[in-house]
Image (cartoon, rainbow, N blue to C red; front, side, top):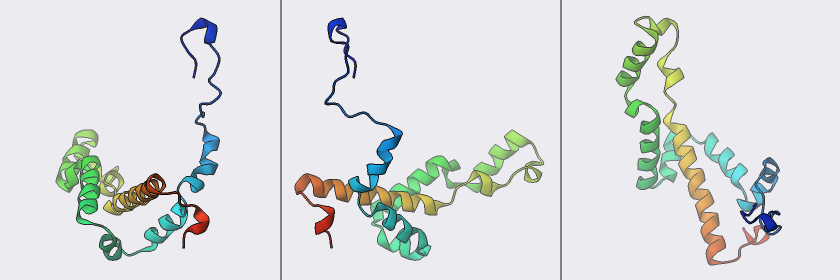
Length: 132
């Protein structure tokens, strides 16, 4: 980081710089994230919901509603009519403008997975070698 002092305008050598290349160390920060993502993406929706606590389901649903017209297809239809006119069905569809809630369930589970690893690192030094 550059300082405002003209005499000390050099970069701080101790500070880590964020860059695209830091993505290669992502798996080390959150071990098994890729495997966990693959596992939950293959689960049926019923089983996916069983993995989640009530708060997680509520959070995922709130995110979904916030980004998808409050979860209302009627609101989506009205918005599409405003944008494209009365023949909006010839141009687009509701599916193109409303995402599936499943992606939000998966997102919340991945966030929780990362939080668990962060908590373990905070309370104790766990290395990937010592995990199951």
